[in-house]
Length: 173
Image (cartoon, rainbow, N blue to C red; front, side, top):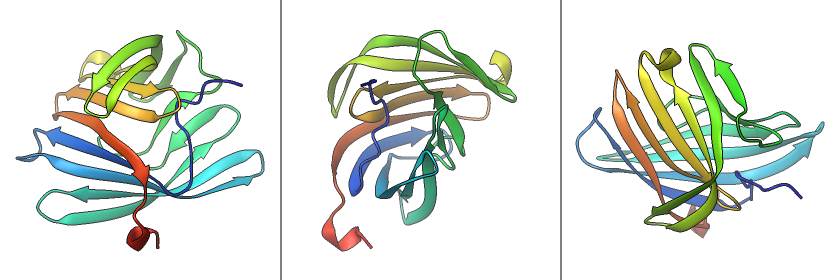
């Protein structure tokens, strides 16, 4: 069975800390996987993103896994994107104009607040072909999206996984 770098499990909550030059302080981000359905050869997860800084904003979105891609319709740092091609392989490149991405490693080690992870997938995205900066993100096997460092001409930010848990009962609606 191939390594799962973005598990889609119902009722799972990912908690992140998020810093950005776009605001002061540290935001808390919760990504909740609410429901997962298989349909027409695809797996579609209904998710929500809760952004907490001085107040709270909730945005619903979907995550789709088909035979060729894992895709999100929204995200913390950028809007929706093709997260990575499937099956996962090193040195695979793809373009989402004007950006170009590449899976540069499947063997990175990452140590963050949520723990120590090995055999991580590292993706480097050159923003506007590198003219506007770059983004480096990591996905841990069996855990998912754990870290992203974004250095663009418009902003600099970092998203780091703090924990993975079950969505609290009162929030499952």
